[in-house]
Length: 358
Length: 227
Image 1: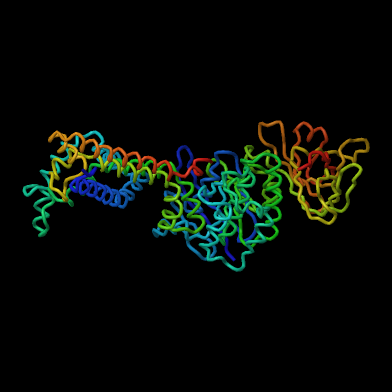
Image 2: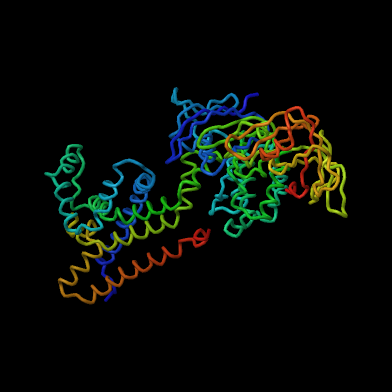
């Protein structure tokens, strides 16, 4: 099954967007990059909201745009679920009116569980409210369910959490994580927050200065050694594992993954629950021997696969293999030489548990 | 003696009919024009907006004079109408409608344009993403959100047409039941020294204008102003 193929160019003020991406037909693809990289413009062009863009966009077997053949399918025929950064609700409708705007136009499809979705996103008690009386988090939840109810074949989410504060953000991220499990259609999720991406995405497209820097599966792409320094903070490992134990006294959980186990801060996880955790490359310390007296709770046995020297920088990136899981460590070049490390060596990767608190 | 003579009542009815017809036509024709002005990127936007605004600053007598020239038997429009076998427009109710529409055009088009502009593109983009086509978007999103502007446009267009004098004098004349509107009748009364009748009719105009403005503020929903 084919997903979204988009290859287009567009000029927007100082930004020259020139992208070529192929997105899979399933799962969540993150469009990740620094502010001003052209992520939102890219999403708008996919939706057909930037008529000046030239190129070719196709989704599944539908051709959405082909400038060479003067094909341009208008936005309302593309069957999208677009969530904007600001909730952009219709002020002249109640919450229910907003939710039903797209649902009615999609002819109230039977396979969409309207009531179930309203309950899952906690909107039941808000249905009769005017949108002016809602909080920021409530508005964005309405906006998401409104998009989901329009029976979309592709979901486009443009930084839906960026305008929200702590609690509302965590709440909505939870909603999105649960949505991820039941999602039948692919989603493109724009974000400049790597923690959001790590929790939600399956694939990633890295965008910088209007160009696609890299694209592929989340784990493989974020552990690459050849990405530009601008994306350095995003580098790291995404560990997928299962909660195998909870220490209520120390408020820690044990996460079992193919490379061993990790201790993480406990929030509201249950035993058996699959969770993801991100280990940023900069949070990993390397040691020749397993340390006995150290405050770092996590020590994972690894083998060095490769090292990338970032030129004039004081740092280098080390790619490690932990029984099949790739782990990335950013250390100083001085340490690399002081420990006499080289590819093939056995090392211990240490990670503070507090660095893993989501 | 009755407060209003039959002729006065006739003038009052004619005035309200004229204002009603003109407002209805202006809303129908002015809405697409205002939509175009609010959304186009054409280089003709500013010149056309200026032409639409002209009646705001032009003395009504000047506007009426040019209309008389154009619509008269020797005018460009007048000759075309005659060639089509239609009756001439000056000194008829239809002529008065045409002239009043031009005269009140900016009072309808400008509030509508402002209202459409203030909605912004976002609600329309959202509607498009939810599967609504262009007409659907206009009637279910743009028009409801621009409703306060529509009400303002209708009331201003109506009230402004009720009060016109100079244009009517030029192109309508003073034919009872045809073109003798309230303001002409007041003028006649004053000319004849009938100050009492002039006073009663003037009060009528005052009440109509006040009622129109009151209706405007009552019909404007306050709830959209939030958010």
